[in-house]
Length: 288
Image 1 (tube, rainbow, N blue to C red):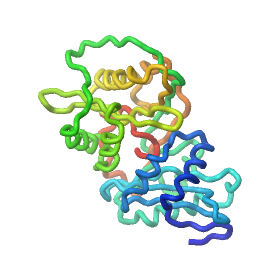
Image 2: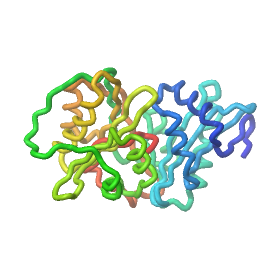
Image 3: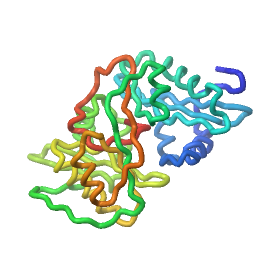
Image 4: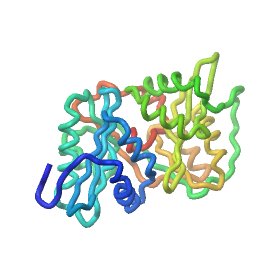
């Protein structure tokens, strides 16, 4: 697709280096592995805008089982902004997602108004919190059982619990996190049933913890504390649902500060809202 000074085309593995430069220029936390995850499933949509044989913008959409498509990585080189590139990318992606029952994304404050013009509606807020060097901390708990590392035979239960809380099957994403970062994958079990989990991944600037799913805030705090104890002295980022005020207060108490917020938005309809009450940390705005 051609539009004046730029063309839109499907992203290829050879574009990952250019895409990384765009995300690094914005101070985002993606890695090459993240970009590869977007590209490895034919059901996903990854588009670049090219000007003079140079990749100047990107947009991705992960297709979660034709139930929810998740738009992310809307990046435009600063020198090429104001030319309608992001609007063209988003329009193209949305057209390609016609068969998907719902389209969602986590919008920055700057992007929120753009998405509203495209028909997206607000769902809830998410707070990005970071710490530049994780400090040791103590955690008082009355729990008799503590998180354990997730093993291979636990993967189906984790994927099913994530589907229940998120609202759509994310086997590709959750399976990748479990395989690639097993030392960041923790679970709580009761009577051989997984009742909560915390996953994580490496980032280019921060270790990222999420998603975290739990039945109570105490369980969520225990899962998160277990993950954070392994990252003492290292930079960490989390994305917390803003209604989880107790968890946010605890994160503040151990040194995290809020950087900005995202607004979760949806288009078409919201038939797969999941169970936000059990979602404490999301996987990240690029993944949902």
